[in-house]
Image (cartoon, rainbow, N blue to C red; front, side, top):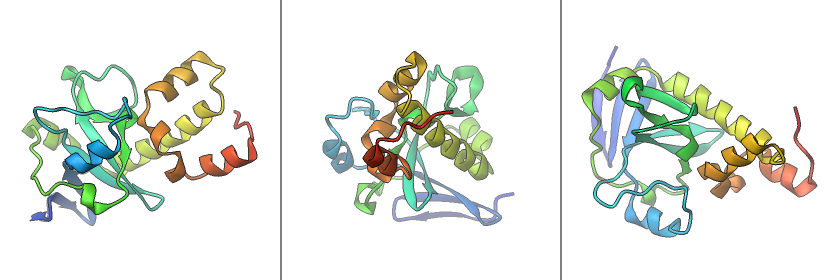
Length: 174
């Protein structure tokens, strides 16, 4: 059930009994900062709409994409392979990287994601955990591939545990 719709400072809020989905665009400044990071999705003709969520006090922006061919996704239109691509999530370190533009989202995708804040949060958290395990076990081909194509490789300093494990050079197994 939608309680309220509100436009404020570039965010598009949809409230569902206390949980809100925040759709944003990123600024050119963000893309300039990460211009050498090849896995960060960039479109020159129109920006990706992103869903902003917070996990462990870190703000993550997850892009809505089409033609997704892997399992790290929250589907918004499975038939057309559209959804929130967890493997391409980025950290938003500063609000200056959030555009004041109002995101445009296809109605069917909007309807499918309504009320799924908890699911998105849970799946993103699981994806981060999977990435950490894969990172410390890259001798396994599938783990090496996951790490190679994930944008999380650019944000280790924001991922809890990975920084400490890297310092201690502890192999994370299981």
